[in-house]
Image 1 (cartoon, helix red, strand yellow):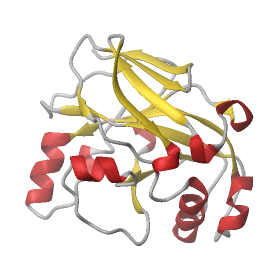
Image 2 (cartoon, rainbow, N blue to C red):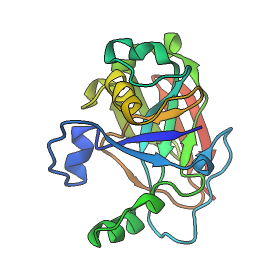
Image 3 (tube, rainbow, N blue to C red):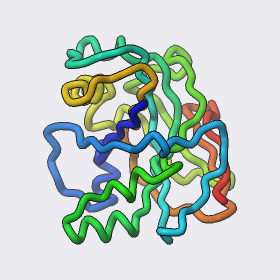
Length: 204
């Protein structure tokens, strides 16, 4: 099982993070299988970072084997979606970037890919117009809509399949909008697609 993530896929977040790049293709990075955190289990802040940020994203699950998928057929390769959190050790990422070094450890550490309950796309709605949000301790902290993606899900699936064979169960984190921020011990995170709560866990 692979966890594939898309960086810089919302213009609002890119502005927030002061990214001025004009992207011609999706920016892809990977998380490790041990990054996955599901079933509402708590997230424990790791000892190597003092600045763990949440990044709320719509996640799709691949449902069949595919390689070099044409964009017009990409929709056949996923049929479920949920809300997820791409946890980032921002202080570690900032340091590694400043030194011109790879920054996988800031993104792919254990339990950094939180995933909610998957629902059929028929229930989630049009994949290109899905509203989603994150609440922390009952207050909305981040909100987005897949309509604002720079690269739509079908484009991402087709692009990724050029480099990696997609297999059943692979997850694609589709990018985060503006509003990322830190989490602290004791926080209660709840993620929604529309008004449907699909993610619910605590930070320890």
